[in-house]
Image 1 (cartoon, helix red, strand yellow):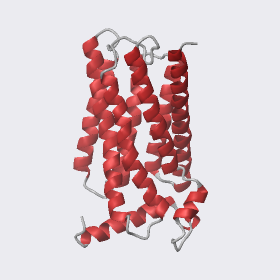
Image 2 (tube, one colour):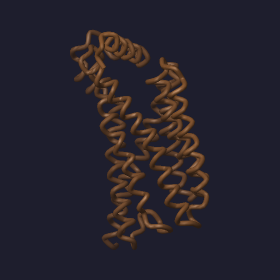
Image 3 (cartoon, one colour):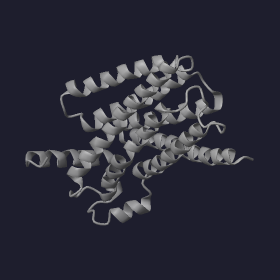
Length: 265
């Protein structure tokens, strides 16, 4: 077996771990949404489950690019809805729905060019650029919201493992957008990860490494191991079972409101 094939097999294993992690955590969040009756968690859970299933089906069956693009864009629209419901639910709807409308328009344009990307190099590049912009809106906005929230709650009495979730999310979410930046420069009409094309194989390797890192950090952020919960929660008055996720969100909102009323921005 050639060294290129061995390398691709190794990188493919990293991609499988990423997709498996994404699917498992997505389903976990859907279950948590049902338990907590929290609509926003349904959106983030459905987002990652949809993205993972779309990529898995695309790899196994080679579905048309236009069909795959629908599910891929849907997942990132769901992330934007999660951001709005979680971080902007108490604000006036005008600004947040402007952003949602812009993202939706970009998603439609990206889908349109995805249908022609195999027949036109210009359509291919435009589709990749739109992909990058849409995913940047979703993931970088999520990172920004988590950063602002973490900055306001890091010295509060909110559980340390909750603070860690926001910290991990704002650090690692932007790295996933690097993939879509890389793909803009992927060779036209060359299968992704083609062993006979050095540039494509390098891009595949970078994508596999980035997604693997993100997948592990994502799992740590959302499905925090119980022993680490206890480790980071020693100074808490209440245990994790005594403070549900929805109550924690209320505590965070109260903390943010208190700091803003005190002039701490």
